[in-house]
Length: 134
Image 1 (cartoon, rainbow, N blue to C red):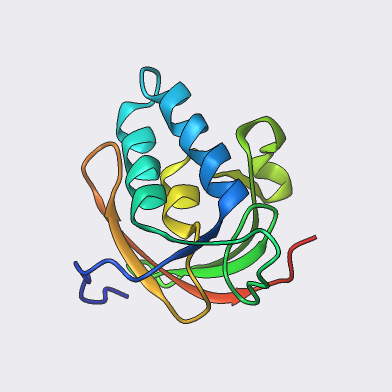
Image 2 (cartoon, one colour):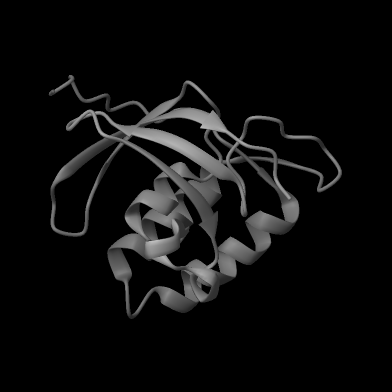
């Protein structure tokens, strides 16, 4: 199932504390994972920032449970977005320092994003559902 790929980036929203921590993470990972770190840094930079106390229902943040669709394959996945030290792919806990994790951060249900993997392959994801952050 191949859908047309969108090139316009959707608006995203982050809490102030997530922006600060994700910015530091992207900087620290720049040498080891340059493409993904740059993508994450770009996402953090373009995000609308809100206070930590601002409710963000249905917006993907750290520790959010997310169901998304791979728009190229049509496959749906349910994951929890975490920092790299908590990642466990077998348990469905994906790192924000992966291409998919960096793409999901700040999106809301119904939004899609197209991005390029470190190998240069196009990917497109659509967020179907976002669970309440813990």
